[in-house]
Length: 148
Image (cartoon, rainbow, N blue to C red; front, side):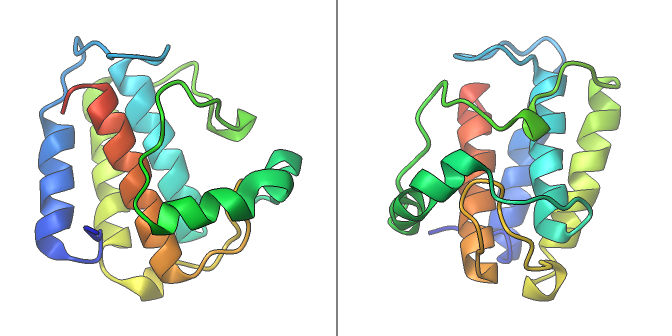
């Protein structure tokens, strides 16, 4: 599976985000491009320890089963509900959102020492390798959502 700790994979993800414009329309879902990019940045902020939270009730019920699927590279399905902490209704312009995302992605890509071991709000405790798999899968899901 690709890894954000692998520089060629990280650069490929960054290039895919760069291809998204403010008028790029999603193939599914309600977010516009800038909202999706902010949503992805929030996920990275949890992985990096910039934001903290506790595992949600639904995560306690289904998180460990979903984590097993994650390890096998199962892609997220379209229109899966998200935690309230990740719902984005307002954003700055898309270039500002891309800049924030790029900063967080480059920091994450510096290596496992950047991942702070915070619990995922859905999966619960994750190893650095699991955070890497989850973040790659999450970013890829939203890039596919916008045809990138």
